[in-house]
Length: 294
Image (cartoon, rainbow, N blue to C red):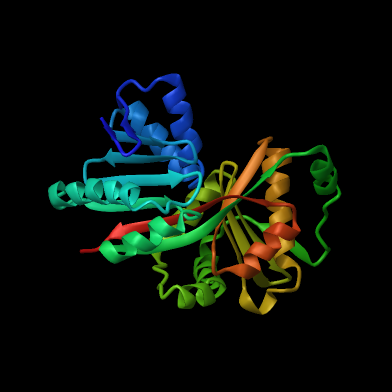
């Protein structure tokens, strides 16, 4: 099917070139988008893979159908200013809305494509999150820096302890309160959060930073992914975030021997972004995650 430079690929048997381009384009959203695409393709629940190509721009739109959801991914190398191109995507999404029934509908976008984001805000999609992916590759220089990293005598990282579960929850709520208020969100913290922390600890992916008997902050890893870094608000701006981050990097690069690491941070959380940039991370993607709400 050809329509305004759109080409529909055979989803069950993408060519090497098609698959390579698809991965390249969805990777511009973030690593999670790439993982979702690859799992859908391997699991044969990639419903459609539509590629856009003209002399000035390339893009992709994927449609993934799970048991109880549809997930759409849209990413272009350059922002779109062609109405016919956007209209084609609109009509495709409209057809999915009409047939989705009770299934949820998610739309993940390359956030540098601001025209597309602004367009679909008018058609029932609510933005769940807008943020950056930050990443870092392991280097000889970084390994030397981390090898010299030591904690002050008054500081210690401890494993998960059941008796401190409420302290961890209070820390997470306090650390992200300002971000939640700006984004008009409310953190749902409780038994599931405690279970998540406990499971992370069982896999040696959890650490809590204590100063004497005071909990300062914590981190949660998932392989090479830094899932969470939290610092109690009264200790922010005093270097503890850098200490926790260096401890994570030492574990990831030296102990677990991963070659790179990454994390996600909301666009509104400028303080965290400064921390990561200051410590050698680079922006590797910009994403907008949305849910259909009509």
